[in-house]
Amino acid sequence: MIQWDSSLSVNVAEIDLQHQRLVKMINELNDAMRVGKSREILGKIVGGLIGYVGVHFATEEKYFAQFAFPEAGQHVQEHRAFSAKVDDFATRFKSGELGISIDVMNFLSDWLGKHIKGTDKSYSACFNANGLK
Image 1 (cartoon, rainbow, N blue to C red):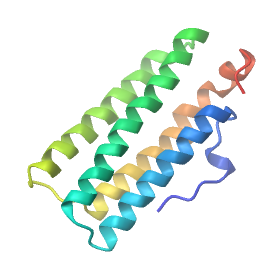
Image 2: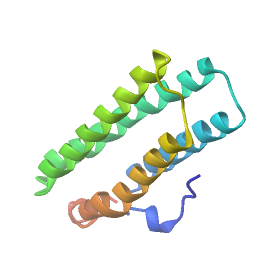
Image 3: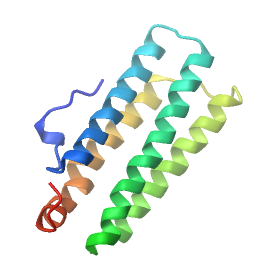
């Protein structure tokens, strides 16, 4: 669903590795959905993805504070909006109200790609200038 390539790199090794893991997790969820894995397995993948997104956002936000990144406020708002949407999706999935569909997968992959290539790239120069590579 998502192919990692250099266009997704933010030139910070730690964050690139986290982004690669997120790409892998979204691809795993997509593969599991397409082959009709059970709700239990899909639920475990969704739970893992949500947990790791939290870890990843915390990493970025730690560096925003450490380096006084000027666009931190807007970036954190994007993180919160995404987390709220995914949490709502997970709650609806667990209750049986919603299944994992191609629309959900497209939302996840589109958001991640646009967020990395747009919003995340904006902190690369700041982080690199502060010695984070």
